[in-house]
Length: 106
Image (cartoon, rainbow, N blue to C red; front, side, top):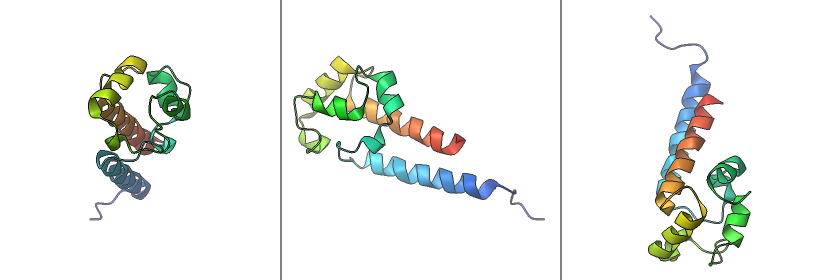
């Protein structure tokens, strides 16, 4: 008996891709890539309309700096003041989770 289901390969590939992406996000990605944060995610969870604006309004040159270079306490203060999250890690984690769901569902 063949246990494979017709049409599962694309789903399996999307899940694998999503898991790879989650690994990249957890590995400490560079902040400048707005590919990590969809425009709808930023609009729904921050006071900005794009990730570019989130970076431009920060007290650091986030489009040229790695988030790991910014003191965590100060980055968390910025996130708490301008988003629905208390920490950078919370923001980044939910963005990754939503991206995975989007990749699997769509």
